[in-house]
Image 1 (cartoon, rainbow, N blue to C red):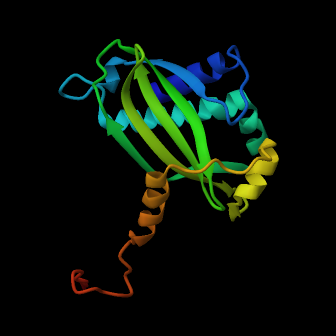
Image 2: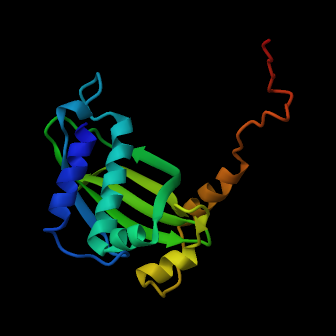
Length: 189
């Protein structure tokens, strides 16, 4: 429920804040709420990823992309994400999430999102996303760039981001039709 409340607050406050280009850095303010905490009384690591979702929505809303996506019946999905934690956030702490597109390839958009408290980095995430059509199928990056009015080529991705994205290709879900020596299939009757 708190995330729905946060989404509502975000929608209301996004309209009052400055407009952005989709390639600008979007700064979204937050505060640690009681239900963000884990048993050690700092923000739960899972909550960071949820906050990232909200910050990306803020960028799309403030750039006008959200409205265009809805008109096309397209929607974003995260396909890969990673985060490095540097410090903790505790109850009542104010912090910002700084969101920016760092590049793209034929299928994906790469986004860097940093948690900042008092100009100190708390955590840094990189997210790989793509867009899908509600009618079925994938939105190509070329279609997305055209919709958002971006005509420039992608900036060079940091080398580690390119390797990270490529490495994910080797990660496969077990198939029920094939069994590897490490996988046992059990049939119950």
